[in-house]
Image (tube, rainbow, N blue to C red; front, side):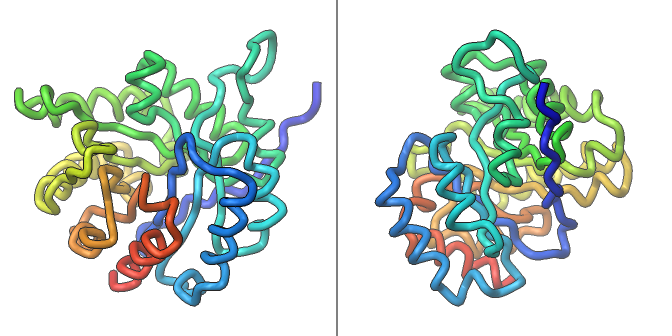
Length: 266
């Protein structure tokens, strides 16, 4: 069996700047990606050290990212990973395979994976461990549905989701993750949580992280529910918002750069 490739984790402390990660979802083509990368890489916004830009792309585009982005400030990652290390699991992609392409981040537990693929908290934990095993940074997603929010269960839901991971990690492992709060009711709907709503949940998540130790309290908590150029600055201004996990706006260079530029203010 081939030895797993290890990459250096890019999980940096909160003081390093806003972390802005584009999640392309099921979008992209070699030609369109090239145009987007060209526009992003020539922008002076991404040369500023006060913002940390990244993109998480579909698996087939990792090779293109490696060729085009390696060595640049725009780092890259994948949107999912297998919970298995290797074996007879047709269609799965192992963390070690993703790491071979120089990826830094892997999204785990996105609401669309939980909703459409029935991923449990236990499965999210297993995927988190696989990503950590090869030195990459897992972006652990948590968030409530509209029904859960209306019932007043937001805190309970996100606590269960995050603690299912934190409880099984050592403090050293936990300090290497990134957390993304993505209110399910705000994903792809055009609606976003208000800055106050986002801060309330982010502060709650920060408390869960702090319970694991002061080093873990420095883990970044990103906002991932319809962040756009017109609301990014207000969200970034919140004490416990450390960046954004960007959906549709990450597919247009001008929108993604505008969000990154908003991050330069904080």
